[in-house]
Length: 213
Image (cartoon, rainbow, N blue to C red):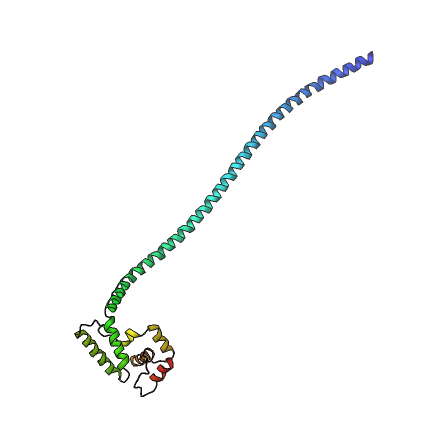
């Protein structure tokens, strides 16, 4: 009986010591649970904020890329506008030249009958004459066409009617002299159906022309 009393007394002392600590533990645990719950809420809010920041960062990056793309497009467009302005200015000058060229072409078309007539006369009769006589012949034929009211270009030459500038340059590259007489002789060789008669004491122009032919 004495041992039981002593045990109950020891238990009461221990209970009075442990029970407040249990109560404090339970209160601390409850407080900890509340804190952990609050921490979880804050962590969830932080995750939402971080997700929003990531979304905003992606939007910002896209905006920056779009801005850079627009800047490149602006630079490209500005360069194109600058080139277009230069081209427009150049074409404006060309328009005047084209208008004059069209006017000249229309005039040439109107004079094609007389020009072709004089050119055929040159092919038929030019060969035996020197440069001065050829010039006089063209003047006489042109004046006669004007008297007969045949449209003809004043000052026309066989070179301007029957020759191609590119072909003449090719002849010169092949060795044909660049003087008017040599060019006319080359035209006589290449445009006539018969072998032309040409006076060439130095034997250089005719040789070149037959080489071309």
